[in-house]
Image (cartoon, rainbow, N blue to C red; front, side, top):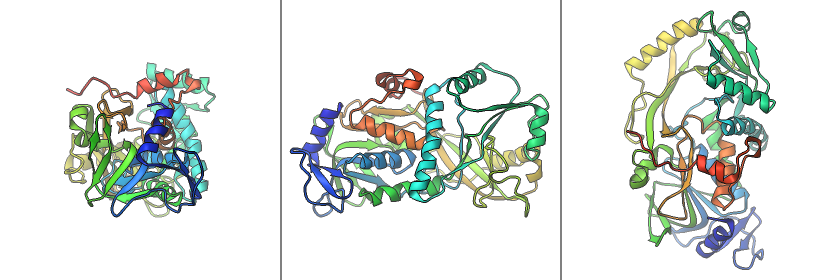
Length: 426
């Protein structure tokens, strides 16, 4: 949908384009009319907006905020609320890194996201990004590792290649797996606080005139190839010119005909490990993000990652660790972080991550509805680059295919990376 058509569509459907919090722009005349304290209009229990964003996880939150900042009236809908424990990014920690192999666009987006995290921290007055560096242990220079290093060189991203002896000297609390390993360190890595972030973004969205609605949304009335409404479990009906379904692991449930086999939804977890009293070696800024382990922030404990395992239903599975997973935690602590091997597991943030068939995010129009956007397929990296994803999706929704000149990617080429692919998981 190009920008001219988008403006025409939302003008016909919603009738207004919100301007900040001071007034609204009449979509037909372009005149500023009476001040508005709300960015939505509705009668009774019905709500009408330019764009309805379903899902208040990292992608939905940031997309809704950027759309609102672009002057559109926006409703953000979530079945449990921002920062809830059923989301794909609950709890207290997520890692931040710039190492993405040969995927230049992801490395650049992660770099730009680091800057955006800092800028938004100042704006929101909420600490979200704890910069302490990213450290990867390597035994050889694989093709992927060489590609990463070449991209860092190309774009002037600082890094260090650290010999084994220096790794042991600098971070003895997290020794390398063997004497054959060396380190690849970059200062822009660190730790993110997902629950604080999601709540801060949602709060900023509301403060800027956005409408937050709590309820489970289901596609409602259609007219030809366009969706007219979504219906909430509360009974409310939300009408919009454009709909963004940023529901992550729930995409196959909302659109089973289109999304069947397109996502692999798997269980993952961060085990929060206690640290000895007065021992700050495992807290920011004294330890980098090592991928496997994240340093503690705000006394939450050291975060040990258990990579995605079993396929799960995001509505039904219990967010509890299995005995096998707990045994893996104990084994890993003993071999990789020996100073913590006898420390208690304080709690476990179990979640799900949804992988697309090619590991790329999905930002694409529904193949049968020309005003419905499918946003998901985070594939383990969406939270890191959330602010940039929100900006990109917001521009796509309003008809602009943003390119990435630094990676020599035009708007259409970048959009092609994020298309809903024909392939499915077996």
